[in-house]
Length: 185
Image 1 (tube, rainbow, N blue to C red):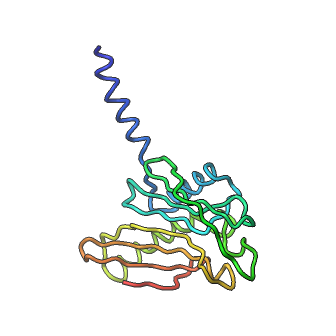
Image 2: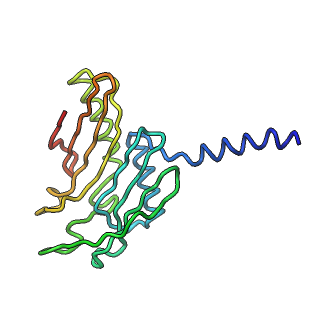
Image 3: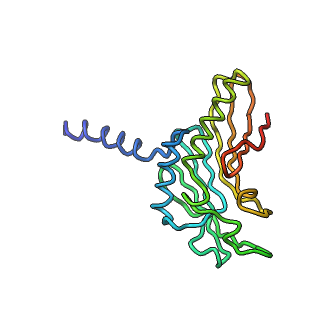
């Protein structure tokens, strides 16, 4: 009986800890997410969107992915507390280009490690330029624009940083190469 009293709380703690789905807002955390996506969807999956929303401890990760771009079919999946759940089927309508032109693959066109670096850079930029010392990344995305001429123009990283003290959100948009395209506050 005594073992049950000690073991049950330990097991519950382990289960709760193992179900957390937070990813650190840095290069290492995003590389961890990249590895998880490759394990879940395969290393050759194609994406039009990867989004991480939350406060860093209980994130919701949402992806639009396909194994076969030419099928013009994607699936939207969300992960919360470590469990993946299919949310919807998506049918793409593409004119004048191959479907791959509007999609990206991890560690080929897109680097989630770079997304992590851009998160850190965005928070630091707010500290330096706007004296915002409590900035927290609440949303980070890699997206393919619905209209594009090239992947370099049409795929972008988007990061929202929130300051509770300033009661404000700052939105950064970076090009595929990591250069800042736009900052809105």
